Length: 267
Image (cartoon, rainbow, N blue to C red):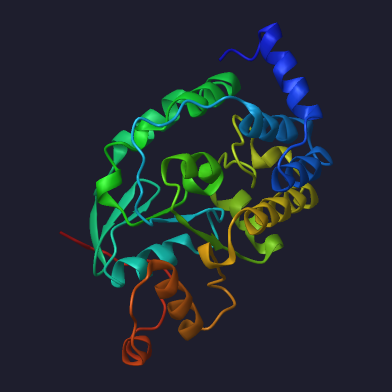
């Protein structure tokens, strides 16, 4: 769909006037208080017609929709220690804390479609098959794409459990700006948008709206919040094991402090 066409502009206008699902409407309203670009990206995500994925993964995978720089490496490594296959951005983790390999293919596809705002939206509306060759190889995904495109990924993994990794917002904003060149702002489907274009306060509003959206959208039993910077090791292990549906013992938690980063032994 080319949203520069008159018919598509009319459709977006109607979408704006129609009654959106309450979770989506509150999200768009909050974004509109900060940025027309953010609000338009969300409107497009919620309103545009979608082509069903070629394949649907019905497993209960865990998708972390928390932003990068919220302890995602720690959580990824912890999940691998619990026996899970984990995809963190380009890095593939094998069970029991071993490093797999870099999965460049998924991200070369991802980057090629994101060259323009329109191209990003069109690609996401019409295809999620960039995951077709990944579905057998992970139980959990963290970082991009799940962090900022989790709503789209739910079309592909409708039974997913949502994880939200969190961090004090000011600490997150400073670290994100310091350690990454052009990260996206903290909302869903930020096609061609960058966090550097927003103040800390504006970014905080967007992230709060994103978290409220997920709380609104997901049943309580299908969403877990983790804060590796503030919660105890035992609490983190217990919550992560529950999200991954893994049995965990007091002995394991006592012998294994929750990771503070990842350490791999290359296989």
